[in-house]
Image 1 (cartoon, rainbow, N blue to C red):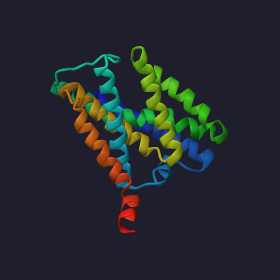
Image 2: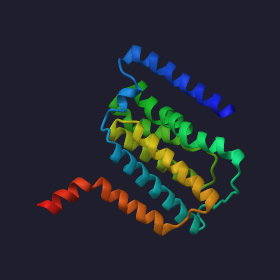
Image 3: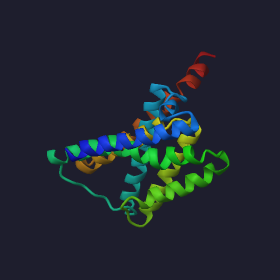
Image 4: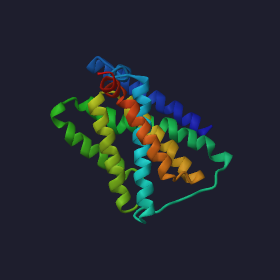
Length: 202
């Protein structure tokens, strides 16, 4: 119940902020969703990036750079997991990726915004040592994705898929490097399908 209430509050706050910003700027977050929108590209790219990030973290765990952790799944933790893979990516990407660029709205400072928001994003997470740098790199990648696509759905979906894989790894020991590598290759092929078709048919 508390997660449902939190989700409703989050949606209300975003709606309130967006309605105020629309009065000032004349557009809203939903118009961002239309930029470079393609379902296949969105899903493929999100799965690709999430798989790659998890693969990197697993390799760092195997190299004893990161501390690996496992847990026992409990049905009581399901509401928190659902909340973490849906509303957490939404609110974090809205606050750290979308909102700063929207409020400042000055492309000259995009790189500065990316660095500052990524630093704040990193230290808002509980981590140790080099894990902060890893989170910072992820945040910078999300910022780059948003700036290139101008569509906040890309970092939101990538963030969501990553959280799903993290929970699978945490509860099920989903640390098969081969499987993740195959997923990455498939996603790359899907994303490059137009180039491949053109090459094969020429």
